[in-house]
Structures are given as structure tokens and as C-alpha cells.
Image 1: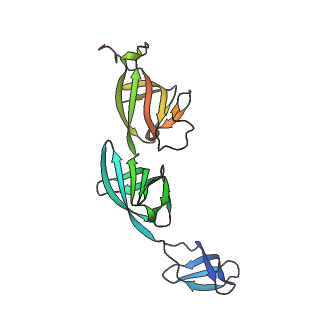
Image 2 (image 1 turned 30 degrees about the vertical axis):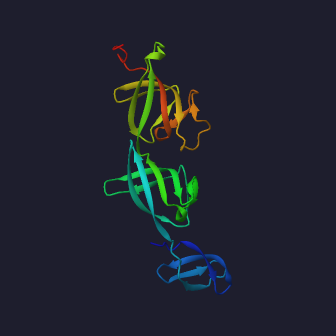
Image 3 (image 1 turned 60 degrees about the vertical axis):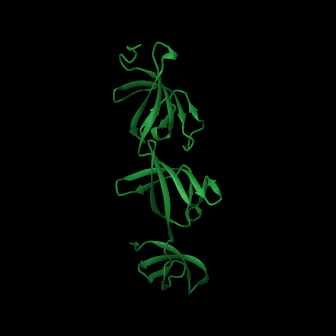
Length: 215
């Protein structure tokens, strides 16, 4: 619902018939009552609605993909790395754009109306791949495992974390290609922090008790 204090740019028939001025919306509706903030003239105008388009979205999650459609503003520009909600009958998923498919090929950004398919991955809950080496330095006896964590969980180089049955100290983090806001694609300085949804792989020192007893 339009709020009485909402402002919108419209031509004013009294003081500016050819150029838009700022108007206050006094009464919303098909024929809205508006007041020009320059000359205080009150008049009725049809406020143009925002044109939307139905856009196909493909969401990947843990090696599987599903397709959905979303309504998006036709004039909006979308870009790789942006996140939005995709609502399906089964769930509402937070998705990050990984690629935009246009008739002429792939692009990193484009107006919504020009896009054929938005390719995304789910980032609300994510799988994080981990390579762990033992505390005694036997690097040839590494092991790999996968963590299931919320996308906004943080991993910090130099800090020890416990997730489920796993305990480890982060030594290096490889950052995903679609992540933004990071200076390098590998972070290994103490204090470097990466969100789980931005992690391509963690390299850690294994702190789990008896993790290497089988060797």
C-alpha cells in the first residue's frame, strides 16, 4: 500500500508540465491524488506501475539442481554475486547468481528483461569442503571431509572451530569465484575471515582427538 508520505517524480500541470518534479502522494489508487512540492498544486495522476517479467532461475545445491520462476522488475540490472530469495512449493531458498544466460551467450551483468536464464547456487545452508592434515606434520596423511553449515557462518584463519564431531584450526581458505569483497582468492593470514557460503575449500590442522589412530 502506498504511504501518504511517499514521494514520486511526476510532471506538474501548474508549474512544470514538461519536466518531472517531486510530488507527495496524498491518496493512493488508480488515479492517485498528488501534491507538487514546488508549487503545492494538488492534482490527480495515474502513477505508472513497475513492469515485471517472469524469469527462469536454476538453483544448484549439493550437486543437484532445480528450476523455478520468479517475478523481477524488468528494468532492474542483475549481476553475478548478487543474492535473492527463490520461493518454491517445497521451500524458500536464498540463492546467489553464478551466471547469466543471454541469447548471445553468458554475461556477468545484464538487465533482467535481456536474460534468458539466471543460474544460481543455494547459499542459505552450504556444504564446505575441508582438507585436514594431522598435528604432527605428516602431510602425506591428510584426509578430506565435508561440513554442513549455515551460509553466514564464519571461518577465520588461526582460529579453532568445532563443527559436529570435527575440531580443527583453520590455516588457509580458498574463496569461491562468485564471492565478492575479498582481495585474494586464497587467504592464509591470521585473522582473515570468510563466510561459509564464500568458501571453496578450507585447509586445516586436525585437532579432533584420535582422528589419526587408524594410521
